Length: 149
Image (cartoon, rainbow, N blue to C red; front, top):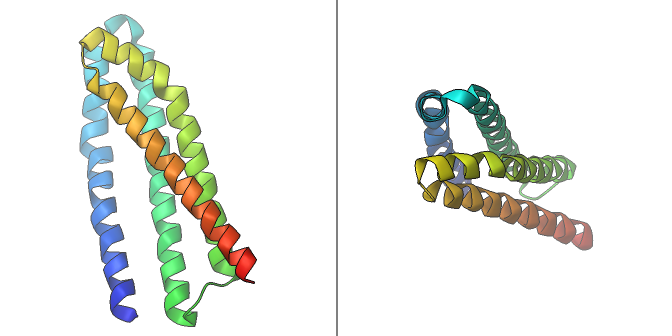
């Protein structure tokens, strides 16, 4: 059991490192590119940047909650009260992530239309779908846990 938990923690680390690198290197470059392409709408780069950093923070918070769940399972060998609280926080973060990216959809459409890059919209839709999937999965885990107890 310890090997599987260690492997899941390593996987979370591998997932979160590119997310941190994107927020340090790619998000500022994206905001500068938006400001260069759309000089009249400078505020758009700032709004998109705030949304991206906010959603990245929510994803990192969810990763921290997953590590808390793995530590709890490693100690007790089963799900407990702290685990259900962490699952609720992950579900809330996923819902807010979905809402944030839904709000940013018009901004991404505006940028995709001006730069003739429709792939930007697909990235936004994929992130929304992933967030909805996470929220649904955590909701199912919470229902299974309450049904089991």
